[in-house]
Image 1 (cartoon, rainbow, N blue to C red):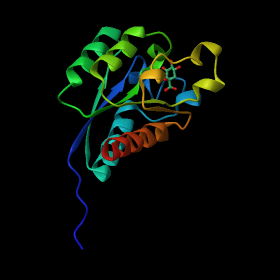
Image 2 (cartoon, protein in one colour):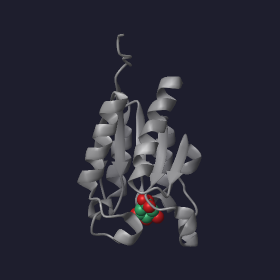
Image 3 (cartoon, protein in one colour):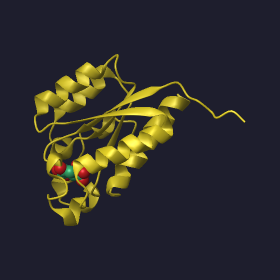
Image 4 (tube, protein in one colour):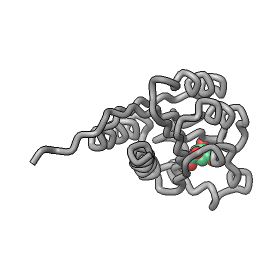
Amino acid sequence: MQELTFSPLSILVLHGPNLNLLGQREPGIYGSLTLIEINRLLEAEGLKLQAKVLPVQSNHEGILVDTIHEALGKYQGILINAGAYTHTSVALRDAIAAVNLPTVEVHLSNIYRREDFRHHSYIAPVAVGQISGFGVQSYLLGLQALVHHLRSG
Ligand code: DQA
């Protein structure tokens, strides 16, 4: 029997501030995997899903905004862990709304079990959905959900 093939998808994976320090940063909260290891797992999951995954990390809000703008025409969807900008950045939210690319928000930690200031996300209202609290699985589940959303839309 012939294997099912899907039209190729390209997914932009955006990691916000301080996520470059994963592995050494508060491992009790964020786990011990480095960002490079998380990106490798995402690329492997992408292969299974027949989706190309391109990871970008920045500690700078403007660079994240520029990267979202440049995604138009290159990527079909965005998987984003905006880190602390989740809770502060109207600019990131507006950029996602402006390009209107299906976006899934992920967090390693469960932001609703943590400090009050982490309970609000500026990204959530412009995202297809949010996955929070499953460590690296949040990213992998988020990628699956985004690809499924794009293929069923
Ligand atoms: C985070 C949660 C944010 O509150 C925090 O500022 C981060 C990481 C997470 O993945 O759990 O930097 O987005």
